[in-house]
Length: 287
Image 1 (tube, rainbow, N blue to C red):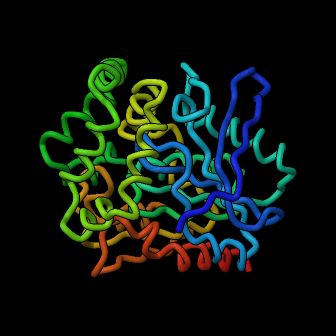
Image 2 (image 1 turned 135 degrees about the vertical axis):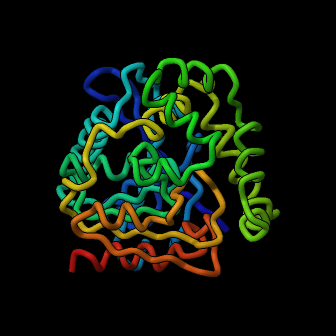
Image 3 (image 1 turned 90 degrees about the vertical axis):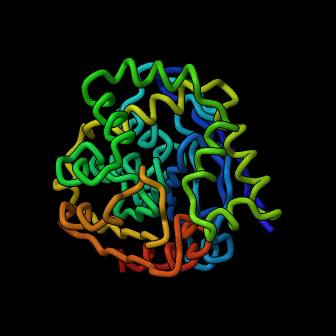
C-alpha cells in the first residue's frame, strides 16, 4: 500500500508556488525526486527503505504540473533555482536527486548546479540530440528531436495543442513491453499512475510541453562537467524509444563518475520494482 507522509508548498521569491509530496524520514537527508513525463503528485516507492536509510523523499511537481504554478520561462537553470529555494526552506545542506524517465535531465541539472551530492537516473531519458544517440533513433523520434533543436517553439506549441493525460497514458502503454504493461496496468498501480497524470495535466498541457522541449533538445548543461556520483539504472526490456537507445551506455561514458546497471529481466518500471536497492545504493555513494 502506498502512503504519503505529507504534502507541502512553498511560495518562491518570485511569487510562484512550488508543491511537493514527501515520505520517508521526516528529518532525513532530502532526495529530490524528478518524476516522469507529465506526472505530478506522488507515487511513493521504497517507503520503509527511505525511513531505514534516513532519507526524506520529496517528489516535486515541476512548474506547470500538479500544484506547482507555471513558469513561462522554465529552464533547467530556473528549475535548479527553485530547488535551491526548497532546500533552503527545509534547511538542508546535503541532498540527493533521482530522475525517472523524462525527469532524468532535471535531476542531472541539479547536480550540474552543485545542489546534490549524488544522482540516480532510473529508466532515464538521455540527451537524444547528441550525435551518437541521434543516429540510433527511429525516424519519427528523430523528427521530434530535430524540431526541439531547430524550432523548439513549434514543438512546444504542437504538444500543448494535442497532449492530454489520456493521450500520454495510451502512449506509455503502447510503447511498453508486456512486462511493463502488466505492471503499469495492474489494479494496484494503474489508478495511482492515472491519477499522477491527471494531476500533472490539471493546468493543461503547457507544463508537460515545456518539459518535453527541454528534455528533447540540446541540454543547456554538459554531462561531462558533472562531478558527482551518478547511478544509472536501466532495464533491458524497456522498449520506450524516448529513454535511451543504448540503455545508458553513452551517458555512462560522458559522466566522470558513473555506475551503470543494466538489468536483463526488467523494463522501465524498475523505479518501483528496484526501489529499495536504488535508495540504498544512492545512500551508500556518500559513505
